[in-house]
Structures are given as C-alpha cells and as structure tokens.
Length: 75
Image 1 (cartoon, rainbow, N blue to C red):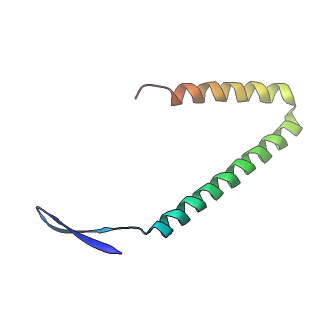
Image 2 (spheres, rainbow, N blue to C red):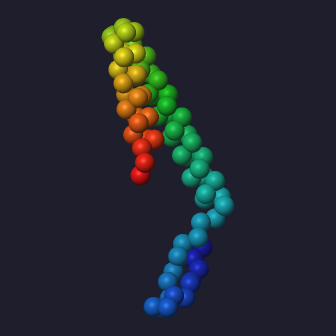
C-alpha cells in the first residue's frame, strides 16, 4: 500500500506496511533470535566439553565485563 505525501520540494512516496507484514517480521525476528541463542548455547557447551570449566569461565567473565563496559559507556 503506497501513499503520497506532499513535501515542499514536490511529491514523495513512502511505503506503509500492513499490520500483518509487521507481525510476520516480528515473528521471524523472534525465531531468528531463538535459533541464534540455541546455537550459542550449543557452541558454548561444546567448548566447555573440550576446554574444561576454569579457562572458559575466565574467558566468559572477561568478555562479559568488557561487553558490559562497552554497552554502558556514555555516548
């Protein structure tokens, strides 16, 4: 569904998404997130099996700390 908006410089067309399209995109995004999360947990458990607990927990702690600092920095 397209609609036209009159701008000072002329006409401008913009796309308007239907509620169904937005809901489908939201559902697909959530499904993608669940798949990525499951894959991450699987890889983590596989690494844990090969490396052991102590090095992996240390690495995860450092990565978590750096990630927290990076996300909480002032922009």
